[in-house]
Image (tube, rainbow, N blue to C red; front, side, top):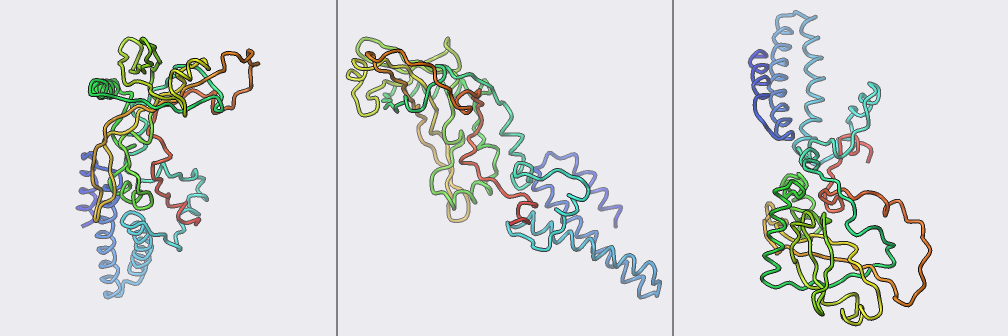
Length: 314
Protein backbone atom coordinates (compact mmCIF):
# COMPACT_ATOMS: atom_id res chain seq x y z
CA UNK A 1 0.00 0.00 0.00
CA UNK A 2 2.71 2.47 0.99
CA UNK A 3 4.69 1.52 -2.11
CA UNK A 4 1.66 2.33 -4.26
CA UNK A 5 1.25 5.74 -2.62
CA UNK A 6 4.95 6.45 -3.07
CA UNK A 7 4.66 5.56 -6.76
CA UNK A 8 1.68 7.90 -7.18
CA UNK A 9 3.60 10.65 -5.42
CA UNK A 10 6.54 10.07 -7.76
CA UNK A 11 4.45 10.26 -10.92
CA UNK A 12 2.75 13.47 -9.80
CA UNK A 13 6.10 15.18 -10.29
CA UNK A 14 5.77 14.69 -14.05
CA UNK A 15 2.68 16.92 -14.23
CA UNK A 16 2.76 20.72 -14.30
CA UNK A 17 0.10 21.38 -11.67
CA UNK A 18 -0.91 24.41 -9.67
CA UNK A 19 0.89 24.37 -6.31
CA UNK A 20 -2.34 24.57 -4.35
CA UNK A 21 -3.92 21.71 -6.30
CA UNK A 22 -0.80 19.58 -5.96
CA UNK A 23 -0.76 20.10 -2.18
CA UNK A 24 -4.39 19.06 -2.02
CA UNK A 25 -3.55 15.84 -3.89
CA UNK A 26 -0.61 15.21 -1.55
CA UNK A 27 -2.91 15.72 1.44
CA UNK A 28 -5.39 13.17 0.09
CA UNK A 29 -2.58 10.67 -0.54
CA UNK A 30 -1.31 11.32 2.98
CA UNK A 31 -4.75 10.58 4.42
CA UNK A 32 -4.85 7.26 2.57
CA UNK A 33 -1.39 6.39 3.84
CA UNK A 34 -2.31 7.34 7.41
CA UNK A 35 -5.43 5.16 7.27
CA UNK A 36 -3.22 2.24 6.24
CA UNK A 37 -0.83 2.94 9.13
CA UNK A 38 -3.82 2.96 11.49
CA UNK A 39 -4.89 -0.40 10.09
CA UNK A 40 -1.40 -1.81 10.73
CA UNK A 41 -1.43 -0.45 14.29
CA UNK A 42 -4.78 -2.10 14.99
CA UNK A 43 -3.56 -5.34 13.41
CA UNK A 44 -0.41 -5.49 15.58
CA UNK A 45 -2.33 -4.64 18.75
CA UNK A 46 -4.85 -7.37 18.01
CA UNK A 47 -1.97 -9.84 17.64
CA UNK A 48 -0.57 -8.49 20.95
CA UNK A 49 2.60 -7.24 19.29
CA UNK A 50 2.58 -4.30 21.67
CA UNK A 51 5.85 -2.65 20.66
CA UNK A 52 5.07 -2.29 16.97
CA UNK A 53 1.40 -1.70 17.64
CA UNK A 54 2.00 1.25 19.98
CA UNK A 55 4.69 2.68 17.69
CA UNK A 56 2.40 2.56 14.66
CA UNK A 57 -0.46 3.98 16.73
CA UNK A 58 1.70 6.93 17.83
CA UNK A 59 2.76 7.52 14.23
CA UNK A 60 -0.89 7.36 13.16
CA UNK A 61 -1.96 10.11 15.59
CA UNK A 62 1.01 12.38 14.76
CA UNK A 63 0.33 12.13 11.03
CA UNK A 64 -3.40 12.59 11.61
CA UNK A 65 -2.67 15.84 13.46
CA UNK A 66 -0.60 17.34 10.64
CA UNK A 67 -2.98 16.06 7.97
CA UNK A 68 -5.82 17.81 9.79
CA UNK A 69 -3.83 21.05 9.63
CA UNK A 70 -3.25 20.50 5.91
CA UNK A 71 -6.96 19.95 5.31
CA UNK A 72 -7.78 23.21 7.12
CA UNK A 73 -4.98 25.07 5.35
CA UNK A 74 -5.40 23.83 1.77
CA UNK A 75 -9.14 23.17 1.62
CA UNK A 76 -10.53 26.08 3.68
CA UNK A 77 -9.68 29.66 4.62
CA UNK A 78 -10.08 29.08 8.36
CA UNK A 79 -7.43 29.30 11.07
CA UNK A 80 -6.27 26.38 13.20
CA UNK A 81 -5.69 27.62 16.75
CA UNK A 82 -3.77 24.46 17.63
CA UNK A 83 -1.25 24.80 14.78
CA UNK A 84 2.29 24.32 16.14
CA UNK A 85 4.00 24.33 12.75
CA UNK A 86 5.14 28.00 13.06
CA UNK A 87 6.89 27.13 16.33
CA UNK A 88 8.54 24.11 14.74
CA UNK A 89 9.65 26.26 11.80
CA UNK A 90 11.10 28.83 14.18
CA UNK A 91 12.95 26.14 16.15
CA UNK A 92 14.46 24.81 12.92
CA UNK A 93 15.64 28.29 11.93
CA UNK A 94 13.28 28.76 8.99
CA UNK A 95 12.56 32.22 7.63
CA UNK A 96 9.29 33.92 8.33
CA UNK A 97 6.66 32.93 5.82
CA UNK A 98 5.15 35.78 3.84
CA UNK A 99 1.97 36.01 1.82
CA UNK A 100 3.97 35.73 -1.38
CA UNK A 101 5.16 32.29 -0.26
CA UNK A 102 1.63 31.08 0.41
CA UNK A 103 0.54 28.24 -1.90
CA UNK A 104 -3.01 29.61 -1.66
CA UNK A 105 -1.84 32.16 -4.22
CA UNK A 106 -0.87 29.38 -6.61
CA UNK A 107 2.02 30.32 -8.87
CA UNK A 108 1.13 33.99 -8.66
CA UNK A 109 4.53 35.13 -7.48
CA UNK A 110 6.34 33.59 -10.41
CA UNK A 111 3.76 34.80 -12.92
CA UNK A 112 3.59 38.29 -11.51
CA UNK A 113 7.34 38.78 -11.75
CA UNK A 114 7.66 37.15 -15.17
CA UNK A 115 8.30 39.69 -17.87
CA UNK A 116 9.01 42.45 -15.37
CA UNK A 117 10.68 45.38 -17.09
CA UNK A 118 12.48 48.30 -15.48
CA UNK A 119 11.77 51.73 -16.94
CA UNK A 120 12.85 55.22 -16.05
CA UNK A 121 10.24 57.99 -15.78
CA UNK A 122 9.77 59.19 -19.34
CA UNK A 123 9.42 62.88 -18.45
CA UNK A 124 11.61 63.14 -15.34
CA UNK A 125 10.76 63.74 -11.69
CA UNK A 126 8.19 66.24 -10.41
CA UNK A 127 6.83 67.31 -7.05
CA UNK A 128 3.34 66.00 -6.44
CA UNK A 129 1.97 69.46 -5.61
CA UNK A 130 2.83 70.59 -9.15
CA UNK A 131 0.76 67.93 -10.91
CA UNK A 132 -2.76 68.22 -12.29
CA UNK A 133 -4.98 65.51 -13.77
CA UNK A 134 -5.88 66.03 -17.41
CA UNK A 135 -8.87 64.74 -19.34
CA UNK A 136 -8.04 62.71 -22.44
CA UNK A 137 -10.76 62.34 -25.07
CA UNK A 138 -10.61 59.58 -27.66
CA UNK A 139 -12.35 58.82 -30.91
CA UNK A 140 -12.58 55.62 -32.92
CA UNK A 141 -9.10 56.03 -34.42
CA UNK A 142 -7.31 56.81 -31.14
CA UNK A 143 -9.13 53.91 -29.44
CA UNK A 144 -7.76 51.61 -32.12
CA UNK A 145 -4.31 53.07 -31.45
CA UNK A 146 -4.66 52.32 -27.74
CA UNK A 147 -5.65 48.72 -28.49
CA UNK A 148 -2.70 48.37 -30.86
CA UNK A 149 -0.37 49.79 -28.21
CA UNK A 150 -1.62 47.24 -25.67
CA UNK A 151 -1.04 44.42 -28.18
CA UNK A 152 2.53 45.62 -28.73
CA UNK A 153 3.22 45.91 -25.00
CA UNK A 154 1.91 42.40 -24.35
CA UNK A 155 3.94 40.97 -27.24
CA UNK A 156 7.11 42.66 -25.94
CA UNK A 157 6.60 41.19 -22.46
CA UNK A 158 6.19 44.59 -20.81
CA UNK A 159 2.51 44.06 -20.03
CA UNK A 160 0.86 40.93 -18.63
CA UNK A 161 -2.86 40.16 -18.67
CA UNK A 162 -2.76 37.40 -16.04
CA UNK A 163 -4.49 39.19 -13.12
CA UNK A 164 -1.23 39.30 -11.19
CA UNK A 165 -0.98 35.51 -11.33
CA UNK A 166 -3.95 35.12 -8.96
CA UNK A 167 -6.37 32.23 -9.21
CA UNK A 168 -10.11 32.73 -9.69
CA UNK A 169 -10.62 31.63 -6.09
CA UNK A 170 -8.31 34.35 -4.78
CA UNK A 171 -9.95 36.96 -7.01
CA UNK A 172 -13.39 35.80 -5.83
CA UNK A 173 -12.43 36.24 -2.17
CA UNK A 174 -11.10 39.72 -2.90
CA UNK A 175 -14.17 40.72 -4.92
CA UNK A 176 -16.46 40.09 -1.95
CA UNK A 177 -14.60 42.75 0.03
CA UNK A 178 -14.18 45.15 -2.90
CA UNK A 179 -17.02 45.64 -5.40
CA UNK A 180 -14.74 47.34 -7.93
CA UNK A 181 -13.73 45.27 -10.99
CA UNK A 182 -10.43 43.41 -10.68
CA UNK A 183 -8.55 44.22 -13.90
CA UNK A 184 -6.14 41.87 -15.65
CA UNK A 185 -3.50 44.63 -15.88
CA UNK A 186 -4.11 45.85 -12.34
CA UNK A 187 -5.44 49.24 -11.29
CA UNK A 188 -3.10 51.36 -13.42
CA UNK A 189 0.08 50.47 -15.30
CA UNK A 190 2.70 53.15 -16.09
CA UNK A 191 3.46 53.39 -19.79
CA UNK A 192 7.12 53.03 -20.86
CA UNK A 193 7.02 56.05 -23.18
CA UNK A 194 4.69 59.03 -23.40
CA UNK A 195 4.84 62.63 -24.52
CA UNK A 196 2.57 65.57 -25.24
CA UNK A 197 2.64 67.08 -28.72
CA UNK A 198 1.00 70.28 -29.89
CA UNK A 199 -0.54 70.16 -33.35
CA UNK A 200 -2.14 73.47 -34.21
CA UNK A 201 -4.36 74.50 -31.29
CA UNK A 202 -4.64 70.94 -29.98
CA UNK A 203 -2.59 68.93 -27.48
CA UNK A 204 -2.27 65.21 -28.18
CA UNK A 205 -0.84 62.39 -26.09
CA UNK A 206 1.51 59.98 -27.85
CA UNK A 207 2.44 56.76 -26.08
CA UNK A 208 3.88 53.32 -26.77
CA UNK A 209 6.73 51.00 -25.95
CA UNK A 210 9.24 53.55 -27.28
CA UNK A 211 9.42 56.86 -29.15
CA UNK A 212 9.59 55.23 -32.59
CA UNK A 213 6.49 53.08 -32.10
CA UNK A 214 4.46 55.71 -30.22
CA UNK A 215 0.87 56.33 -31.34
CA UNK A 216 -1.68 59.07 -30.84
CA UNK A 217 -3.82 57.82 -27.94
CA UNK A 218 -6.05 60.84 -27.37
CA UNK A 219 -6.44 64.60 -27.16
CA UNK A 220 -6.11 66.57 -23.92
CA UNK A 221 -9.36 68.53 -23.63
CA UNK A 222 -8.89 70.02 -20.15
CA UNK A 223 -6.21 70.33 -17.48
CA UNK A 224 -7.49 70.43 -13.95
CA UNK A 225 -10.50 72.77 -14.08
CA UNK A 226 -9.08 74.85 -16.94
CA UNK A 227 -9.47 74.64 -20.67
CA UNK A 228 -6.30 73.74 -22.54
CA UNK A 229 -5.90 77.19 -24.13
CA UNK A 230 -6.22 78.98 -20.78
CA UNK A 231 -3.71 76.62 -19.15
CA UNK A 232 -1.22 77.14 -21.98
CA UNK A 233 -1.48 80.92 -21.72
CA UNK A 234 -0.73 80.90 -17.99
CA UNK A 235 1.55 77.92 -17.41
CA UNK A 236 4.44 75.99 -18.85
CA UNK A 237 3.06 72.46 -19.28
CA UNK A 238 4.78 69.07 -19.41
CA UNK A 239 3.22 65.60 -19.52
CA UNK A 240 4.46 64.08 -16.24
CA UNK A 241 2.75 60.66 -16.01
CA UNK A 242 0.67 58.39 -18.21
CA UNK A 243 -1.06 55.19 -17.10
CA UNK A 244 -2.96 52.46 -18.89
CA UNK A 245 -6.30 51.47 -17.35
CA UNK A 246 -9.29 49.30 -18.26
CA UNK A 247 -9.36 46.09 -20.27
CA UNK A 248 -10.51 42.61 -19.19
CA UNK A 249 -11.75 42.34 -15.62
CA UNK A 250 -13.45 39.96 -13.21
CA UNK A 251 -16.09 40.52 -10.53
CA UNK A 252 -17.74 38.25 -7.99
CA UNK A 253 -20.85 36.40 -9.14
CA UNK A 254 -23.20 34.19 -7.14
CA UNK A 255 -20.93 31.15 -7.10
CA UNK A 256 -17.73 32.30 -8.79
CA UNK A 257 -16.09 35.07 -10.77
CA UNK A 258 -17.70 36.67 -13.81
CA UNK A 259 -15.57 38.09 -16.61
CA UNK A 260 -16.14 41.38 -18.38
CA UNK A 261 -14.29 43.86 -20.54
CA UNK A 262 -13.96 47.64 -20.54
CA UNK A 263 -12.23 49.70 -23.24
CA UNK A 264 -8.60 50.45 -22.55
CA UNK A 265 -7.92 54.09 -21.71
CA UNK A 266 -5.00 56.34 -20.87
CA UNK A 267 -4.97 58.50 -17.73
CA UNK A 268 -2.43 61.33 -17.56
CA UNK A 269 -1.05 63.95 -15.19
CA UNK A 270 0.39 67.27 -16.34
CA UNK A 271 3.14 69.16 -14.52
CA UNK A 272 2.80 72.94 -14.58
CA UNK A 273 4.80 76.07 -13.71
CA UNK A 274 3.73 79.69 -13.88
CA UNK A 275 5.40 81.35 -16.86
CA UNK A 276 5.94 84.56 -14.87
CA UNK A 277 7.27 82.86 -11.75
CA UNK A 278 11.03 83.04 -11.02
CA UNK A 279 13.14 79.92 -11.44
CA UNK A 280 12.53 77.65 -8.46
CA UNK A 281 15.42 76.37 -6.40
CA UNK A 282 15.88 72.61 -6.49
CA UNK A 283 13.92 70.88 -3.75
CA UNK A 284 14.72 67.56 -2.17
CA UNK A 285 12.49 64.90 -3.69
CA UNK A 286 11.11 62.11 -1.59
CA UNK A 287 12.58 58.63 -1.87
CA UNK A 288 9.42 57.39 -3.58
CA UNK A 289 9.83 60.05 -6.27
CA UNK A 290 13.47 59.20 -6.96
CA UNK A 291 13.10 55.45 -7.20
CA UNK A 292 13.07 53.74 -10.57
CA UNK A 293 9.59 52.70 -11.53
CA UNK A 294 9.02 48.97 -11.80
CA UNK A 295 6.19 47.77 -13.98
CA UNK A 296 4.19 45.06 -12.24
CA UNK A 297 0.55 44.24 -11.51
CA UNK A 298 -0.26 46.88 -8.85
CA UNK A 299 -0.30 45.34 -5.43
CA UNK A 300 -2.88 47.67 -3.99
CA UNK A 301 -5.61 45.63 -5.62
CA UNK A 302 -4.08 42.21 -5.24
CA UNK A 303 -5.55 40.13 -2.47
CA UNK A 304 -2.88 38.75 -0.22
CA UNK A 305 -3.90 35.44 1.21
CA UNK A 306 -2.46 35.03 4.72
CA UNK A 307 0.30 32.50 5.17
CA UNK A 308 -0.04 29.70 7.69
CA UNK A 309 2.13 31.58 10.21
CA UNK A 310 0.19 34.82 9.64
CA UNK A 311 -3.10 32.99 10.24
CA UNK A 312 -1.72 31.47 13.42
CA UNK A 313 -0.57 34.83 14.79
CA UNK A 314 -3.98 36.51 14.40
